[in-house]
Length: 218
Image (cartoon, rainbow, N blue to C red; front, side, top):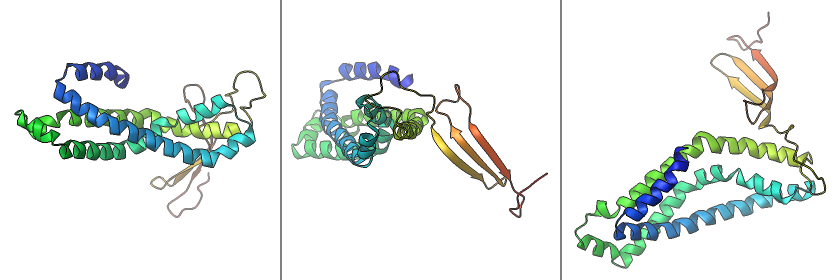
């Protein structure tokens, strides 16, 4: 909610800032947008190369493929955003320095920190985006991706099958094992749900060992 409400506040802050601040922001956002779109396009091409044959073999419809890649965007953006910020920042500052624009801005009486102030705000805002994605959307996107892949392999989404999508068999993960070395306990969860408010874990098995790693029985 904080991220969604922040968009109009950021736009309002931008248009209420000075002309020099708006120019610095525009100079930075152009390479930033192209770099971010380029990284996402490269990832999309490589992922289509890996999963494209599965989509064709399972006769998955276009809507399912779009959903498959849309749910992964938070995770991809979280991964490429730091590199995108670095490259776009180097490009925009180098361009302004080569055209003597930074010297002209300093000649107006502003300090270097004041000239770069909009870029610091953008960095903080991108940190907020990464925080929100890492807290909720990025972890969920990985589970949803595995669930959609399993559903596609099972032939759940086909072009020649009318009706709504069947989501009853979609699980975030199948056959998940966790070893707790501190308590000498091993967990196996056969089915991990996408949403714990609607479903519970299925086929749960727990093994307890003693300090000599012998299976404990009673």
